[in-house]
Amino acid sequence: MTRKDIKITIRQKLWEKAVKKAMSEFQFVHTITDALNAILLLSLYKVRIKHRRTDNIFLSYSNITEMTSDTYISFTIEIIGELLDEAKKNNPNETYSIIIESALADYIVLPTHFYTDNLSPIYTIVGSKNNTMQKATASAIEFMNLNHEQMTLVDACCATGSLYFGLNTYNWKSVILNDLNPLRTNMLNVIKHQPLKLIKSILSSPVFSNKEYLSEYMTEAHSITKGYEVKRQHYHKIDCNIDIDIATMTFIFQCVSKQYPEDNNKILNRITRIIPASIKLQNAIITQEDCLKYLDNDNNKFVLLDVPYIGSEYICSAKGFNYTRFHKNIADKLLNAEYPFLYYCRSTPPKANNPYNRQDAIHIQKLKLAEHFFNKGFYFEKFYLNEDTELIISNRQYSDNQFQWNDEEQIII
Image (cartoon, rainbow, N blue to C red):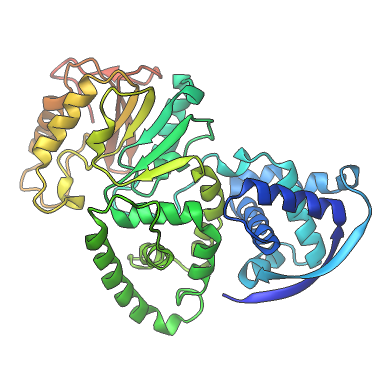
């Protein structure tokens, strides 16, 4: 990461209003420099996310004198260099002063939900929800007409938080994001409490600055994060013990250790989501418990449940864990649930390590699902993803696309 000292001349009231708003709204902002870096990141996020560009407040920038005086102030301030370079790349003909003023105007005028609605996940893992399922979940919740202000949203197996991030920004009474994996809960806690430090740490890592050391870094990161995962897997006091270095390694490992490693540009796309995600997480409690804890009829809540899929648990299985009993316990809880829920599974059989022919595999997968969900009053909705069919199962009807499974000959793929 580089730091740049720039001299800017901007409208005094605009500057004061934006900084005051950031200092009061963002719990992770402690200095004027923090405030400006956060505001600049929001501006970069807006530019990089295509479907948000149409609401560009450069249109209102021409009318900015209506809400500010013409009194200007000049000063020098330190900015994260990579962010400033990116902003300059987007506006090559503008001065730093105009670029900063435009970002401040965006931040003052745009509602917070502009940034926090329908966020893509910060990073991805095997089994994390893609954009199609994010949108499907957001649509289901929208049409349920829930009383959000009186309800607690519980994502009982939140993983990277993709389902929650993909929702519109509702005023939930509270939010609980739970996952047993300490790398994921640590990441969410760091994003919530220390997003700017995380961004600076990522920008200072070899993935950006010292490519020749990246392979060595990745080997070390894999060893350290695995050790952390083992050490913290039964540690429940997670809110008071967050680790930025571990979050950085987790983030970079997910971006680079794949068949087609992401380049700096794609990683920067992810980085610009961190501040919106942090804002969205401010009302969230992050826990590391057995998801069954959250399935009792104990309060007014709405539950998202994305557990390891029936039939393909081996992909993300915990060694020695009894998934047969686990799935039965969940099905029993959901059958008696008084709260609304969305449960995710797959009706297509797993492709790898499958000793059966395709038709036999489909039949076996159907039998496994039928044991828990056939003819029990649940509503099903199908979503086609390349070669797979995803199901959302619910105890609430929210769409004409849903169906009930009460015929043995019914096709659920």
